[in-house]
Image 1: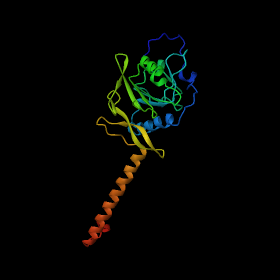
Image 2: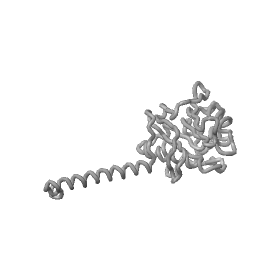
Image 3: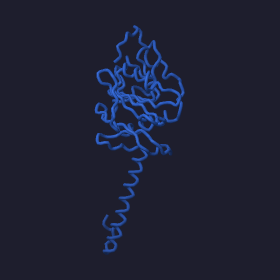
Image 4: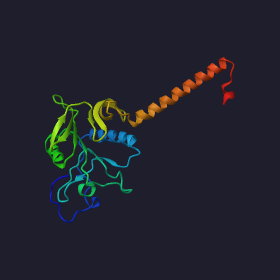
Length: 232
């Protein structure tokens, strides 16, 4: 965690602003994290020791404004501690620095590669991912890993993050009726995890396949003079 001198009085999350109230600059800053979260909600449905937050303020000092990443992941924290959920993420309460942070680059700013990178580095965030679909000469997607207190660029694709048990990368797909490049989670072998809609379609296809096999078997039995209904 950050090495700072905190004041004696430490407010709770309910007493702090829950964001910096800065509007997002494009829809992708909402949709890309939302897709990642929807996959996690399915993958880790039974787990209660993680938080994937979107546009939530992270407080490291009550006298300073929060830093608000597009998304972040924390492990070893309560999934939710009451029905109202978290208004913000307060480091002196949580006692856990986010292990992963994602920034989707806005068209107007480039602080993701400079100021924010340094802030997350100082905060001790293990993995910092930056996605910019507008980049042409440099990689659109970068993942930086904290090594001895300094970020180092990881060149793998997708990037496997053993401390999280997930990989992250990008490929073309469809989400919300939009076909484009999206970020996804991957397993250790580089196989992409399905989205909720893909999982539903997979189950529908499997059910149709079983029904088709059952129908063909019934037809074959009838050809042999056997009434399949009499077998049940």
